Image (cartoon, rainbow, N blue to C red; front, side, top):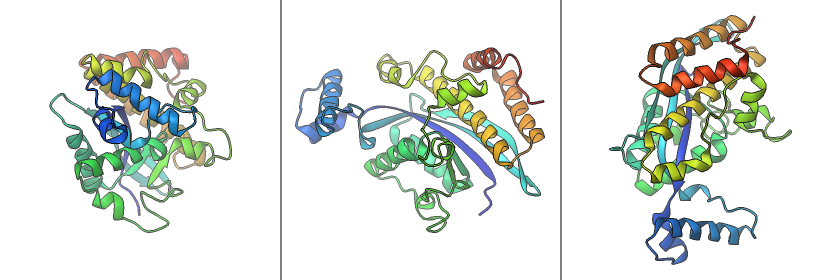
Length: 277
């Protein structure tokens, strides 16, 4: 299948404290106490090795994505940036976010691009969709055993950069921030995943969305380098895709200050060399 668009995405989550009484019988209503109980449970089942909640116990509070059209010139691809935006407005429920995510796939059938999307984001979205009774028919059924959104090695359908760049575990699985540091991209700017739950508690959802969008931009930039490495795009295609990002930031940076901060950090990280020679 020749996908006509890219969908580069990232999610932000907080622990699902509503599930705690059903999981362990812990009935105290305090959110902080329930989070501590969820950590205690995961430490118990992992013999003290990992307090991080398993995928079903993550409530989605923001989904950010970059949408780009794919055009083909012979054996190479050219990408045209269409939008960078987020779900997660105060009026949006988790169910709305998840319906929007899978609805986009229903409508556009894009190539997915993520960093650890197979290990975390997609499993979380699947479990939460089932929690809320959300159908994801196209995602679940399109394609076949070898070429589909669920086929691990079908990177034309879902390119999880964490998997692809490690040769599916043959070498070390690095962090997005590490890849960004090596390639001259901004990486994390003042926020990391451990800060999301406290920010959510403080009502700082807009900042969470901004952080999520920055991760999406980093993911897209790393993806462009990976595609250049494989020959799927050439240097001119890379530079025009990067120029689209710069144009978006210049057009929207005043209204969306986090994009201007991203651009400034990108200049520092790259020595103000945004394009390839």
